[in-house]
Length: 227
Image (cartoon, rainbow, N blue to C red; front, side):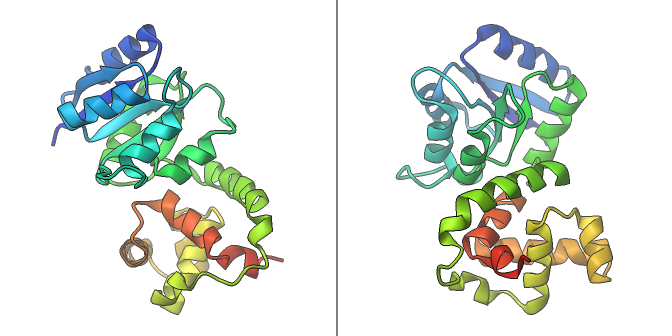
């Protein structure tokens, strides 16, 4: 399968650099470029990419607004199968969380080594979220702060569709554990964990691990069970 990529950044040199790296790979094709969010939306309609590298801060329409329009459901016809990787200069960018909540599948620093950029494109194109456990934990910390106002609110009932085991797996996922760590904690195989996670995604109608973690916090699952 050839991965069709769109590069969105307001700096032409950055776009050119990413294109040079990505086009060294036989399974990756750069099908378009854009310099702002509106351009990204136009290019997605024109060239139907699988993955978008989206700069988070741009003049005009920024990356968060564009992400919401493309995959977050704010547009009348969001492109729900599209995967978006957010590009940022700082790992703890205050806007990264908002972009992930809007529907992005992960984020990369702009100075990422070439091999990591290529790996990211393949991981996200394959339907996985681009978040290491350490990054997930930082996001969880940020989400906990933002969720304090909802800590005493009634629990969201959408988790009722999950089995007790699936709820356990979701909670461990939301606490930042990797698949292997979940398998060890739950005394099951890693393949079984992957099966549970796939069912969780399906039942909660979420795209990937990022969205599942957000759903867990929205529903109060982790906050209710935290010390």
